[in-house]
Length: 151
Length: 128
Image (tube, rainbow over all chains, first blue to last red; front, side, top):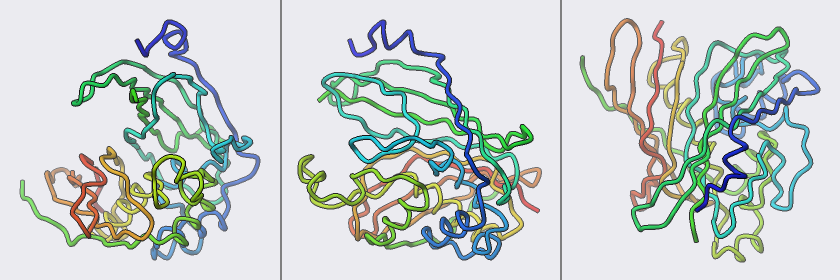
């Protein structure tokens, strides 16, 4: 059984991160350059590309782990598995400018077991992030699935 | 309802692109650049950060629907890894169009071998 009682008890956990500074024109421009985005308002940093706040770890302020990763995680331990990305589902509620100070609130929404086509067990972990600015305006949501697949 | 396939957006993702993306997203995971880390996991090339496909799909949608269109929803599932140096194509087909909202089926493929990187995927776009 991958979904132990200890793991199941964590469903519903929440954690919030607030960026120590506004998103900033430089961050927007850097993201546009890195993705080959030629849309002028992105290259000048006036408006953020819609997926930026769902992709960046700018807000997290976490030390990088042994894998070099410095973004949000739940620190789940699932012995005998490897971790793969499942997918993301974004909802965008309006344009985001460089002055936005992002708060990301992550919730561990669900965990359940499935069997892969090749008969291996896997644990699907669904998290939901809500991104707000310094006025409390909801900017975007991001439902993310990570999958722990039995080795 | 009508349906149309849009001209695919093509990107070759070289290691400097991946390094730039890692910096721009504050994501320094070793999968994306560290050869020794990759070799220990049986991988011979850096792995492209899957989240970048969201950015590419958003760029494609803007090219297809114009600068005044607004993406309201975007979802995608990962199928296969993509590696440094590979070329990908973002495909889109109009599924539904009503009340100034377009629903688009999306897919990302690797150009060299047709491997599916991202599918299923879809977006909703509010038209001006």
